[in-house]
Image (cartoon, rainbow, N blue to C red; front, side, top):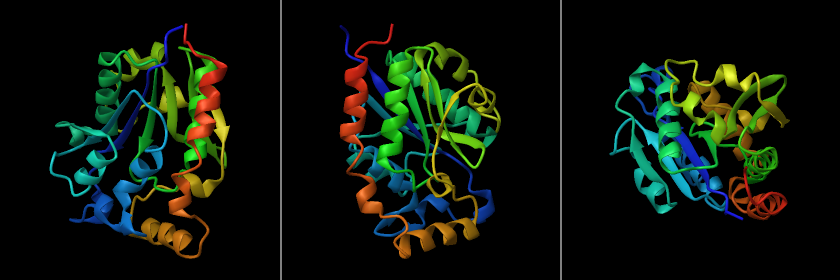
Length: 225
Protein backbone atom coordinates (compact mmCIF):
# COMPACT_ATOMS: atom_id res chain seq x y z
CA UNK A 1 0.00 0.00 0.00
CA UNK A 2 1.20 3.47 -0.82
CA UNK A 3 2.03 5.77 2.06
CA UNK A 4 -0.17 8.83 2.37
CA UNK A 5 1.27 12.17 1.33
CA UNK A 6 -0.27 14.74 3.66
CA UNK A 7 0.54 18.40 3.10
CA UNK A 8 -0.05 21.50 5.19
CA UNK A 9 -0.21 25.16 4.22
CA UNK A 10 -0.32 27.98 6.76
CA UNK A 11 -1.77 31.11 5.19
CA UNK A 12 0.17 34.16 6.36
CA UNK A 13 -0.19 36.66 3.51
CA UNK A 14 -3.00 38.81 4.94
CA UNK A 15 -2.70 42.56 4.68
CA UNK A 16 -3.32 43.34 8.40
CA UNK A 17 -5.42 46.33 7.36
CA UNK A 18 -7.07 46.69 10.78
CA UNK A 19 -3.63 46.96 12.40
CA UNK A 20 -2.68 50.06 10.45
CA UNK A 21 0.99 50.07 9.47
CA UNK A 22 1.87 47.21 11.85
CA UNK A 23 2.15 43.58 10.79
CA UNK A 24 -0.05 41.69 13.23
CA UNK A 25 1.89 38.44 12.72
CA UNK A 26 5.00 40.13 14.13
CA UNK A 27 3.20 41.00 17.39
CA UNK A 28 4.61 39.27 20.49
CA UNK A 29 2.56 36.40 21.93
CA UNK A 30 4.01 34.66 24.95
CA UNK A 31 7.58 33.69 24.16
CA UNK A 32 7.09 33.87 20.39
CA UNK A 33 5.50 35.97 17.67
CA UNK A 34 1.86 35.61 16.75
CA UNK A 35 2.69 34.38 13.24
CA UNK A 36 5.03 31.67 14.54
CA UNK A 37 2.67 29.87 16.92
CA UNK A 38 0.58 27.86 14.43
CA UNK A 39 3.75 26.61 12.75
CA UNK A 40 5.21 25.61 16.10
CA UNK A 41 2.05 23.70 16.97
CA UNK A 42 2.03 21.89 13.62
CA UNK A 43 5.71 21.03 13.91
CA UNK A 44 5.11 17.79 15.83
CA UNK A 45 2.73 16.38 13.21
CA UNK A 46 3.88 14.30 10.28
CA UNK A 47 3.61 15.85 6.79
CA UNK A 48 5.23 15.07 3.47
CA UNK A 49 5.27 18.78 2.55
CA UNK A 50 4.90 21.97 4.58
CA UNK A 51 4.45 25.53 3.32
CA UNK A 52 3.80 28.98 4.68
CA UNK A 53 2.13 31.26 2.15
CA UNK A 54 3.37 34.81 2.76
CA UNK A 55 3.30 38.11 0.90
CA UNK A 56 7.09 38.52 0.97
CA UNK A 57 10.20 36.44 1.56
CA UNK A 58 11.59 38.78 4.23
CA UNK A 59 8.77 38.41 6.75
CA UNK A 60 9.90 38.74 10.41
CA UNK A 61 8.61 35.22 11.10
CA UNK A 62 10.49 33.66 8.16
CA UNK A 63 13.47 32.36 10.21
CA UNK A 64 11.14 30.56 12.63
CA UNK A 65 9.06 29.13 9.79
CA UNK A 66 12.18 27.77 8.15
CA UNK A 67 13.49 26.34 11.43
CA UNK A 68 10.20 24.46 11.81
CA UNK A 69 10.67 22.83 8.40
CA UNK A 70 8.24 24.97 6.43
CA UNK A 71 9.08 26.23 2.95
CA UNK A 72 8.07 29.82 2.32
CA UNK A 73 5.98 30.35 -0.81
CA UNK A 74 5.51 34.00 -1.83
CA UNK A 75 2.06 35.04 -3.03
CA UNK A 76 2.62 38.10 -5.19
CA UNK A 77 -1.16 38.51 -5.53
CA UNK A 78 -1.84 38.60 -1.79
CA UNK A 79 -3.48 42.03 -1.97
CA UNK A 80 -6.30 40.49 -4.02
CA UNK A 81 -7.52 38.45 -1.04
CA UNK A 82 -7.02 35.24 0.90
CA UNK A 83 -8.42 33.19 -1.96
CA UNK A 84 -5.20 33.75 -3.90
CA UNK A 85 -3.16 32.26 -1.04
CA UNK A 86 -5.49 29.28 -0.86
CA UNK A 87 -5.19 28.78 -4.61
CA UNK A 88 -1.39 28.88 -4.41
CA UNK A 89 -1.43 26.33 -1.59
CA UNK A 90 -3.66 24.02 -3.63
CA UNK A 91 -1.42 24.31 -6.68
CA UNK A 92 1.62 23.44 -4.57
CA UNK A 93 -0.24 20.44 -3.14
CA UNK A 94 -1.19 19.26 -6.62
CA UNK A 95 2.40 19.60 -7.82
CA UNK A 96 3.53 17.59 -4.78
CA UNK A 97 0.96 14.84 -5.50
CA UNK A 98 -0.52 15.32 -2.04
CA UNK A 99 -3.37 13.06 -0.95
CA UNK A 100 -4.80 15.75 1.31
CA UNK A 101 -4.08 19.36 2.24
CA UNK A 102 -4.53 20.84 5.70
CA UNK A 103 -5.14 24.59 5.52
CA UNK A 104 -4.44 26.63 8.65
CA UNK A 105 -4.31 30.37 9.33
CA UNK A 106 -1.31 32.08 10.87
CA UNK A 107 -3.55 34.49 12.77
CA UNK A 108 -5.25 31.62 14.65
CA UNK A 109 -2.59 30.84 17.28
CA UNK A 110 -4.70 28.88 19.77
CA UNK A 111 -5.58 25.77 17.75
CA UNK A 112 -4.03 22.82 19.63
CA UNK A 113 -2.14 19.97 17.98
CA UNK A 114 -4.84 17.50 18.99
CA UNK A 115 -7.43 19.37 16.92
CA UNK A 116 -5.17 19.45 13.85
CA UNK A 117 -4.55 15.73 14.36
CA UNK A 118 -8.26 14.96 14.65
CA UNK A 119 -8.99 16.82 11.40
CA UNK A 120 -6.29 14.86 9.61
CA UNK A 121 -7.38 11.52 11.05
CA UNK A 122 -10.97 12.08 9.93
CA UNK A 123 -9.85 13.14 6.46
CA UNK A 124 -7.70 10.02 6.15
CA UNK A 125 -10.72 7.88 7.06
CA UNK A 126 -12.92 9.64 4.48
CA UNK A 127 -10.47 9.23 1.59
CA UNK A 128 -9.74 11.44 -1.45
CA UNK A 129 -13.15 13.11 -1.37
CA UNK A 130 -12.64 14.29 2.21
CA UNK A 131 -13.61 17.76 3.34
CA UNK A 132 -13.38 18.27 7.09
CA UNK A 133 -13.64 21.67 8.72
CA UNK A 134 -13.58 23.19 12.19
CA UNK A 135 -16.78 24.53 13.71
CA UNK A 136 -17.39 26.53 16.88
CA UNK A 137 -20.68 28.06 18.01
CA UNK A 138 -22.24 27.16 14.68
CA UNK A 139 -19.58 28.95 12.61
CA UNK A 140 -17.32 27.00 10.25
CA UNK A 141 -13.79 28.10 9.53
CA UNK A 142 -10.26 26.86 8.98
CA UNK A 143 -8.35 24.86 9.92
CA UNK A 144 -9.77 22.46 7.38
CA UNK A 145 -8.57 19.46 5.39
CA UNK A 146 -9.32 18.85 1.72
CA UNK A 147 -8.77 15.52 -0.01
CA UNK A 148 -7.05 15.41 -3.37
CA UNK A 149 -10.38 15.32 -5.27
CA UNK A 150 -10.98 18.95 -4.25
CA UNK A 151 -7.54 20.43 -4.87
CA UNK A 152 -8.19 21.42 -8.49
CA UNK A 153 -11.23 23.42 -7.41
CA UNK A 154 -9.31 25.04 -4.55
CA UNK A 155 -6.64 26.07 -7.05
CA UNK A 156 -9.24 28.35 -8.66
CA UNK A 157 -10.05 30.25 -5.45
CA UNK A 158 -9.89 34.03 -5.59
CA UNK A 159 -10.89 37.15 -3.69
CA UNK A 160 -11.78 37.12 0.00
CA UNK A 161 -14.26 34.23 -0.15
CA UNK A 162 -11.61 31.53 -0.34
CA UNK A 163 -13.14 28.09 0.22
CA UNK A 164 -16.24 29.31 2.08
CA UNK A 165 -18.61 27.49 -0.28
CA UNK A 166 -16.71 24.24 0.24
CA UNK A 167 -16.66 24.64 4.02
CA UNK A 168 -20.44 24.66 3.91
CA UNK A 169 -20.35 21.18 2.35
CA UNK A 170 -17.63 19.83 4.65
CA UNK A 171 -18.02 17.52 7.63
CA UNK A 172 -17.69 19.68 10.76
CA UNK A 173 -15.46 18.88 13.70
CA UNK A 174 -16.83 20.76 16.70
CA UNK A 175 -14.37 22.51 18.98
CA UNK A 176 -14.30 25.23 21.67
CA UNK A 177 -14.71 28.80 20.46
CA UNK A 178 -11.40 29.92 21.97
CA UNK A 179 -9.48 27.49 19.75
CA UNK A 180 -10.66 29.33 16.63
CA UNK A 181 -9.95 32.83 17.90
CA UNK A 182 -8.49 34.80 14.99
CA UNK A 183 -6.52 37.99 15.47
CA UNK A 184 -8.05 40.53 13.10
CA UNK A 185 -7.50 43.70 15.12
CA UNK A 186 -5.72 44.96 18.24
CA UNK A 187 -8.72 44.14 20.46
CA UNK A 188 -8.69 40.52 19.29
CA UNK A 189 -4.95 40.33 19.98
CA UNK A 190 -5.57 41.62 23.51
CA UNK A 191 -8.20 38.92 24.07
CA UNK A 192 -5.86 36.17 22.87
CA UNK A 193 -3.06 37.49 25.06
CA UNK A 194 -5.43 37.50 28.03
CA UNK A 195 -6.28 33.84 27.42
CA UNK A 196 -2.59 32.96 27.35
CA UNK A 197 -1.74 35.10 30.37
CA UNK A 198 -4.42 33.66 32.65
CA UNK A 199 -3.47 30.11 31.75
CA UNK A 200 -6.58 29.33 29.75
CA UNK A 201 -4.33 28.31 26.89
CA UNK A 202 -0.90 26.77 27.45
CA UNK A 203 1.05 27.46 24.28
CA UNK A 204 3.95 25.16 25.11
CA UNK A 205 1.63 22.21 25.71
CA UNK A 206 -0.18 22.79 22.42
CA UNK A 207 2.80 21.51 20.45
CA UNK A 208 3.32 18.16 22.16
CA UNK A 209 0.13 16.12 22.07
CA UNK A 210 -0.94 15.70 18.46
CA UNK A 211 1.60 13.33 16.92
CA UNK A 212 0.22 10.12 18.43
CA UNK A 213 -3.34 11.05 17.46
CA UNK A 214 -2.58 11.60 13.81
CA UNK A 215 -0.47 8.47 13.77
CA UNK A 216 -3.43 6.44 14.96
CA UNK A 217 -5.58 8.01 12.27
CA UNK A 218 -3.14 7.03 9.56
CA UNK A 219 -3.05 3.45 10.80
CA UNK A 220 -6.81 3.25 10.27
CA UNK A 221 -6.39 3.97 6.57
CA UNK A 222 -3.01 3.73 4.95
CA UNK A 223 -4.21 4.58 1.48
CA UNK A 224 -6.59 7.06 -0.12
CA UNK A 225 -8.12 5.33 -3.08
